[in-house]
Image 1 (cartoon, rainbow, N blue to C red):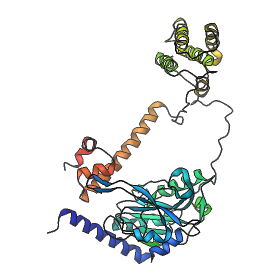
Image 2 (spheres, rainbow, N blue to C red):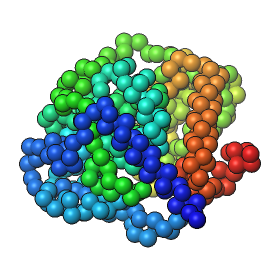
Image 3 (cartoon, one colour):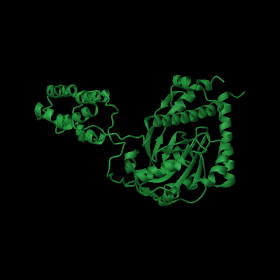
Length: 410
């Protein structure tokens, strides 16, 4: 009698075979070597970095992941490794890292848990509305890879923004019907001819010829370069430092920052000018006399820390008085942070009120929660345990019980 694990593995292999039959009825299957030669044609060196993922036995990691370099003619010697992955990129001296990325050879859409039924729906409903069809489809085991091979590798230098934008846009075009694992362009993938986790061999089917990089950019309607932002002639509402009714909490927060992280030399005199601006904005809750009392506190604190201010306390008072005027009431966040040498973070509400922004975030979180619930249901149907599901989702079992416990009590 078969165990639950054996039955599950057998079902996955049957699904793998069914996907091969569907793809084989529509497209031409090519050999792994032919696919490999197409992807890595024109390669300038004869080495390739191979990423070996962690090997697990249940929840125990038997061997940690690592990166090794192999000669091109030695690649098939490791095809029996189910945890070996190859990036569709070239790296300087084959040192695998985002910072050493030299050129990109293709873009991949990684979809997990694609059954034969779901694959049929994709080919029927999504296929004709894609801006550009993939050049190849790889049956990688439990999932499917939709691959866009480039006719000529694109150099990363000067085009990183365009490459990353195209990569994310291609992946987004499949999210309507599939669950896409979004990855950067340097992410490695299982290659055709390599063993999968369900003890099958990954296969590849040709859809059409390779694209040029510019052709893909046009198909997915992406500008070849990131447009430069126009200089603003007037200050926008999101930049103005508005403190409704003059909040005391903001004034006290600035004081704490001045005590813990004073500005660098040359900016400390400006900090008292900035404090005058903030005190004026908070004058309804922080009276002038009370705000004025903070000047010697800040000055003495900086002096006690041997910061060598370079100006007298009288000059600090003068800077405060100068900032405490109506003409500076529209000082921007950016302007104040430049005076204080602090990080400037722009408002990301895009013109929405705080209430509208919170409603928007709540809606997004609800959608994400529903999507995760659907994934849990799908994993339960496949026979995964609660511990395995928590590991797949990157959650602790406690949080899984707390948020989605109702799905396991049916």
